[in-house]
Length: 430
Image (tube, rainbow, N blue to C red; front, side, top):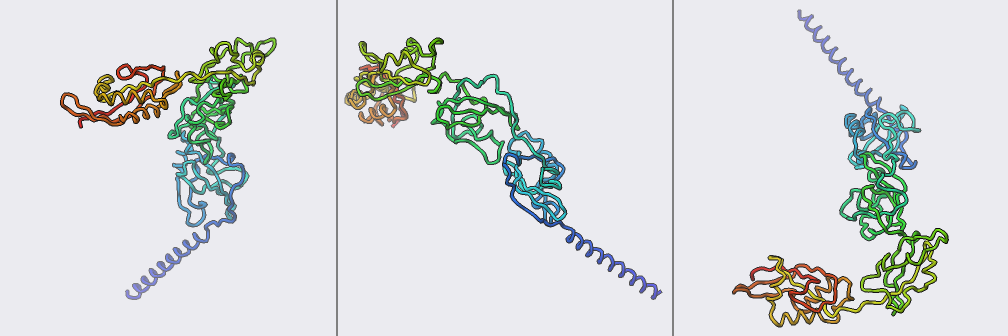
């Protein structure tokens, strides 16, 4: 019996020994069987040809998937979700390629929003994308919307540097259609009147329609923009119209210019003189009027009669007389009372206000807009930026909050009858 027991112990030990040996052999085999990268290099072909999408058959790894230490970055489930996405942020760019000693090809890719970056199996050849990724068109050629055309001129309907939604400026490529390619400029407000012409359209992954526009004014906004961002303009570029240079008759200085549409006489292909009636076709600059009666307003009568598309003409104007007074109305913002606040001024304050509104330095050309700065200067000159007054035994403090300049008509009244420009005050008990 003792002999049997000893044999059992010996047999058990032998089995355990074999098991241990087997485990060591398996681990060693796994380490030895891991693939090795034999080549890794950056892709140098045109970046736009390296836009891809996932097929969902392979996961994304931190290293080529069969290399020792590779960890899953995105599962096949995640890859399928990204492939089915309607968001441009989920577009993917391939930028490196590696091959292993087993002949497998792996591509390093990154999603456009940079949320996913790693290596994915790409087949057995570096000639084309395969395996876990395939080539992908981030935009599709489309018809220009019926609301737009290629012959009219447009401007941006709005500009806002704080908005990045494809409607307030132009883009070098439709948003999220190319990796790290964004707006032509952040703030397009300085070019909000630039004339744009549409030449082609495309739809993006999210279904939005973008159009390519050429800035015919100065080229600053040439690029892509959402079709909904444009509004039709009645203006035309200088090359397609006649430029009127308004010139001060007294000084010879050009004080403004405008481009009016070219309307040619079919037989002579020149602009008929009646069309050049700027009093109907274009407005002279604010504060100026056509040269006085008896003075030829056109720099050249013959040139005006024979103007051609793309030409420029001189039209003489004279500066309007300046105002005798720039009236300002004081408004109590608390009650929207625009009559009593002036009446609450002392006699000296009223005189100071009237004097400031009549001061030569504060006058503007009749018919022009009174600037906010001029209104503030008038109030500062009258020492009415802040003032106090008493009403029914209660003392109040009025503090200037904002102003709004109006169009001056040369009125010589002030106080309750002054309605051209406004000064708004916060009024509180003192």
